[in-house]
Image 1 (cartoon, rainbow, N blue to C red):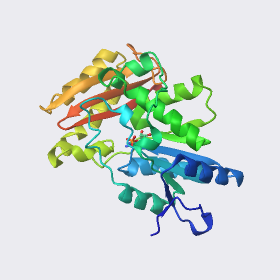
Image 2 (image 1 turned 180 degrees about the vertical axis):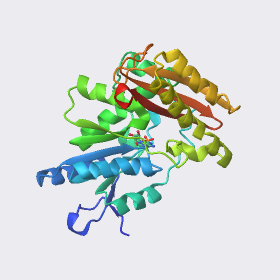
Image 3 (image 1 turned 60 degrees about the vertical axis):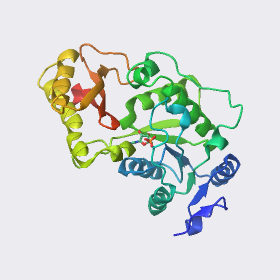
Length: 300
Ligand code: AMP
């Protein structure tokens, strides 16, 4: 395996590059674009798992040149959160990307993205950022939108790929792109799950084997809620209480939120008429796990 750093892109020999600077990634992308390639972009914080890899594969299907960013973005972590212990395994990630045929990894240092005197922030206002994870992680989405706006400006992709796993992040990014007239499209990819049903996450590695097995209750509770919906229940409070009672069977699990909302605006829905997102965040020992499912009358 050959991992070139900051050298010229060479599609013929399929050498994947790991690029650390903004200048260099711009050169690589602009050279791909000038050969008429469509650029796909997959922003990540690394510690790649099959969920991330599914985004890369979707990008490869739709585009000719795929950039994956690996950057643990400090501005989206609050005080006391897991910024320091977040896994950083660039070599392993690079091997996974290379085996899939990724063209370029963009892995900047924090100082490259946030030089001294960095003072410009992108902030999406309203319920969409203040509800759900925004309530328990104030400032989180400001960090996410700022870094994504910067990455979009640096990479200038035709399409950026995001996982439905982070449903609120997806809604917020779509809103930012629309409000700020950014010239790219956002494609949503389905949630990839472990065999137990637990949604894959880089944070699952914080769990012990027992906690990991117990955490399967999260998806089971979402599925039971969906069954209740399919059998005719439309009241959000009743649907949510099904999840609450199932999570309560794991004595150390702590519910951060269980909400039923409009999938686009994230406004609360009291009676599910047509389509709604059930989103949950559960503290499961050392990891705060999020998951979601879309209820739709089309599935009934
Ligand atoms: P992260 O590295 O956690 O910032 O995630 C990078 C991207 O991968 C985001 O768009 C996530 O929504 C997506 N992602 C993370 N986990 C999954 C999963 N289990 N299935 C699909 N996409 C995922």
